[in-house]
Image (cartoon, rainbow, N blue to C red):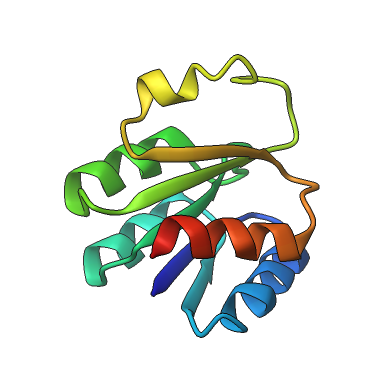
Length: 118
């Protein structure tokens, strides 16, 4: 399984990568829209973990590009805000498989990735 983490907090990205890699997954971490688009252009991923609160670029643009470029790729959206808490993200993004709080324990994130990535 290949996982792309798009997260502007480098510490959070490292922690998630560590926990997910223990499952045997190949994990790449990038910080913004342009790096995510480059990664999706160059390689195929099963899951993208995407922070909706990106500091560099638009998370929605990344999800849209993933849907176009890698139609089988699922996206786990992460946010620290209550925006989309009504579940509307699933109406806007056909590749969305989860919307979780950014403070989710890393072992729970790994379990979620394993569930949706298989």
